Amino acid sequence: MKHVMKTLLLLLAAPLAALLCAADDGATVPALLLSEQGREIRTARAWERVRRPEIVRMLSTEVYGVAPDTRVEARYRTVEEDAAALDGAATRRQVRITLRAAGMEHIADMLLYIPNGAEGPVPVIFGLNFKGNHATTTDPDVIMPAEPKSSPTVAPRGDNARRWPYAEAIARGYAVATICKDDFFPDRNDGYDGSVLPMLYAGSDIPDSVRMKAVGAWSWGISRAIDCLETMPELDTRRIMVIGHSRLGKTSLWAAATDPRIAVAVSNDSGSTGASLARGKQGETVEKINTSFPYWFTDNYKRYNGREAQMPFDQHMLLALVAPRPLYVASASLDDWADPRNEMRAAQLCGQVYSLYGLKPLTWQQDQLPAAGATFIDGDVAYHLREGGHDIVLFDWERFMNFADKYFR
Ligand code: GTR
Image (cartoon, rainbow, N blue to C red; front, side):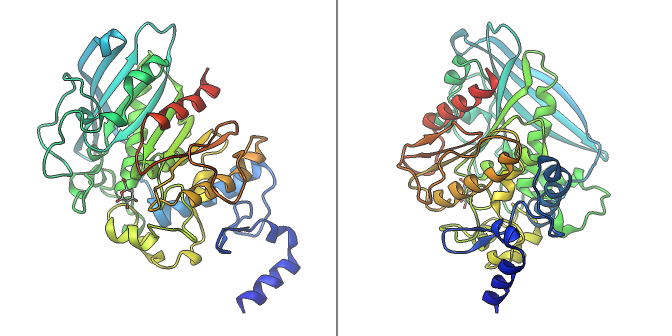
């Protein structure tokens, strides 16, 4: 029956069927360039007017959550600053962000390094971090939090420093800013009460099933970080690249989908519900992610456990929402849980939307993965397959900055 329907579809609407794309296992991902009413999307204008809003609505209600339009008041206080950080190469600034709404208050702490001696405002790389600002560097002057937020103990200073090559970024003229994800939603099953969400949803009539959870709250937090960066005259926030690894890669993609101020978006090893197509996916499935992390995505998303083929969306649509802004999807060769091949496939497919803008899709369009180490940054959608496991290291950062340089220099 399914087969008959498909044949019928092919006969009745050949151009329409041409827009359905076959994934590796023969599973068909929903068409990017076909509206819910069956209208073919042939121009960037029709994409922006018709199809893009449909996809934003769908991914909001089904996956990442509907954000309320609560008016939030923000205050920024520099709590520490040193113009001789990183051996004099940078100014370190630590800013406390206080957010207020509905009689409630929420705090997030930003760490920022700005290159010294720049001739004008500099481009910025922003990324949330996993374990606290103090864990991103061995710099002894970065403030340690008094209490842990999502793990039993506060991480040791510098614990994640190899993932944050500040000196290299500064040497290349980039400011780098970070906030711990836990400041917006503590990354644990009972994190809700300590998150921004009670404040954001106070008095809201948005149904529970479509409300944001951790990933939505983290993405929202990225936008609040950008609000703060916009107040700093040394920074050029028209040139901001947002990067994220793994769960924070999922987050940086949704942030870029919803916040047009993000000029370049980077997903590193984001896998399930990030850059990786769900259909035919190896490793972590929708059911697995919803079971291990029931507090990351909407309750609605759980309806698709084991039912990937029925989803009216797939992750190439999330990537397409970044267009026409440059997008970088990175994988690691041993990262089967994330599924490099399905990350690459989604990056290839979203190029259809970049083409509507006259931009250049990913230049690697083969079915199979390229050799480990291969990097493709000559299109407006970039991809690399780092040799090794699930991680973000200097190899990745260097390529992200090479890509950003194409647009920011
Ligand atoms: C894993 C999770 C992945 C990815 C990863 C990470 O446990 O299954 O989806 O988010 O964590 O964030 O490192």
